[in-house]
Amino acid sequence: MQKCTNNKNFGMPYWEWEKDSECSICTNKYLGSNGFDGKIDSLSVFSEWRQICTITYPQTICVMEDCVCQRPRIVRLAGLSDIVKPDVNDVNYCMTMTNLDTAPYDTSSVNSYRNCLEDIHNSMHVYLGGSMILVPIAANDPLFCCHHANVDRLSTFYYAKYNITPSSYPTGNTRYGHRSFDYPNAFLTTWTNSMLTSPASTTGTIYV
Image 1: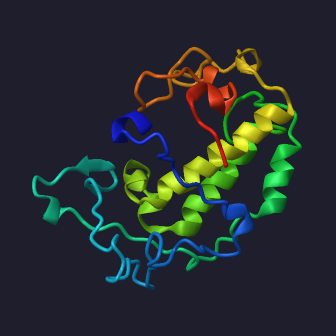
Image 2: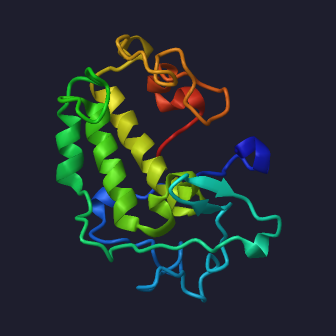
């Protein structure tokens, strides 16, 4: 992205949501405040931010409108649900998991750092609500990048703590897209799953 922007100082912001009692970046100064109807405040630059498509249930078909103005605006319900936002204690608990992942490599896996962090990650999506809980369009909310950058940051700390390397990636996970030599589904062919356990600096990322 530094090459694309021709700016060697370009960096993606991350949101340390585990240390934030609410959503301090959900203000018009940053990513926009939201009302009880989910609409982003009109004084925010993100009030006209559009979703890439509309979602048709139950088929979950993403329908792209030709005209941008016909695509629905993003919505957000930060802090308006009964979901308790994950905090430092939740993150620290995941950090005690010495196994990167365990069989059967799904939501029932126990003593699995991957599953533990995935649960926290999912809770944050539900906490933010609106567009962020709809998988096909979640990335349309700019908060998605800030949230996921922090998830990656936490994993970087975990990998360093337990000296996780590409060889640490479990070989028992045979699900397509999740094997060590697969590339993450829906992403460009860049780094394999196992290589993503390398130090963040390997992919040019430095957290400050």
